[in-house]
Length: 451
Image (cartoon, rainbow, N blue to C red; front, top):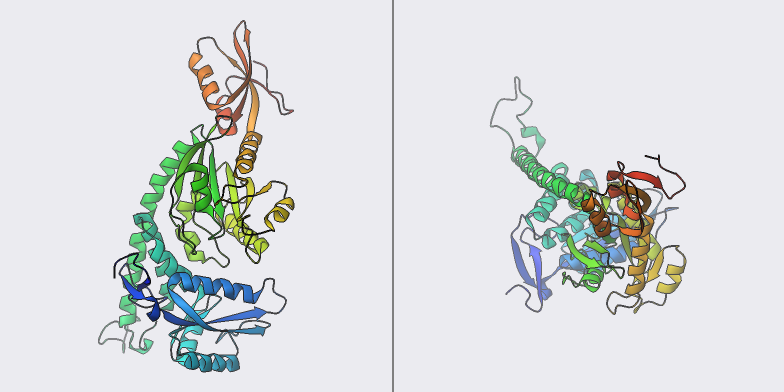
């Protein structure tokens, strides 16, 4: 069956949630894996367990499987051996046998011991939310860097969860009584994975060095950068297409876009801006992925402004906002200024109400274009607020400098003097810092030193 054929679905040959390299197979929808999902609602913990399981169900659908049952247990704390209580684990086993499911997926990351205990009890594969997200990323990674990042995250996740036949056969300790047939297959697998991890880390370090060169060039550019961030499937790529006609991939599924896409757009005042679409975030985003994608996410850290796209039709938009802010804090981008865009206003009556709760927010519909003009006005306003208004005395023989100020900034007035041209200009802060030699004053309540 060809790629894209109606009713075809991607899956790893190794099975749902298992590391299977880059090989893929296509299966018909009738043969999609059947999944039972399990969650624990901790007493006193924030958030809705059912809403989290609804999202897990969407993740499973994006990975190419179907939910056939779910179980939620309320506890004070997860059980250290089985995540759920032993009685509830037996109930899960009964439901799994009744539905003839292939896999049981748990909503939180499980320890290696919990996974082993559950698989022995259930008699079938048990995986967690992290494994599902890694599986989706593996399916959607297309570039060399994206594939390397996902594979590295998968291997880091898989390494402590390797299981083999009895550590008693290990011959790694050395000494009397340990000489014999050699290392076990488990140790061979661990060694192979560690070598692969080192190779991928070296490969990504080389890519990161190249990105750092590009980042330095961008920081020296007068063109401001705006990164579009938000929860997965909030409509970031649709918004980028609406703003810049980028023709980026748009799909109604989670994590459809992993690789950043950058396009240029001129605002109403003639100012050029670079808009970049980024990978979507999600609650309980695996730490392995955040670490692996750090070089890609540096575009967010270096941005002059963030457009934070929020799905106003989601059951809990505020929870999604908090999840995105959590990831931004983890990558060091929490201090970057943001504009909130409550998307899908054509599907939700709450978009306007939500936007009114925030000082810098607007309701938009990336699909129809409603509110996008107002969003771009807010972007221009915030970019101007982040600029510095300074006075420069430009020598008469520095016509190139004067031309650069007109090109890169917004010249407010010019006044010829005996020793040069006094220019009042609104300029990006990183460019204003380079003009310190010619600055005679600032207009932000901190007068500069007269020259």
